[in-house]
Image (cartoon, rainbow, N blue to C red; front, top):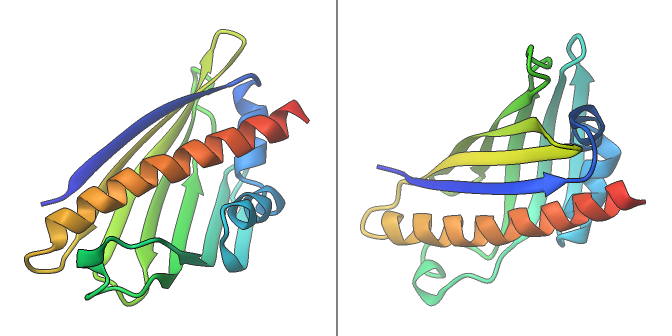
Length: 164
């Protein structure tokens, strides 16, 4: 079983501008640094107009009491972002996976950037799975709740970067 996370944001820029920012290793480094990540490394390449980024970073979270028995507060996170070429409606889709080293967990999701009036709508959907007996469900709920907060911080950071 897994838990689902869905969030939507709007940016005051066209899809290709938002995509160029979200696929840029420099932007990603600034964004994750602003969120408190350390030891950030990004291996990125362009696959015919569609970015592929492998992101490694150390993340520290404020764990609830029940989680402190099975997890360390600082962990290395591995994330893979695979962007697709724009479709006929001008949308860009990123398929991503997130794994926390040493923790039996995984997030599989998509980010869809769609034209929306004079800007871009960002829809994020993710399945969060934590495979720890008796605590998996609680940890999934914690991951979804903290994930939504982190994604809002990322959206605020992106909006500030777009605004210049």
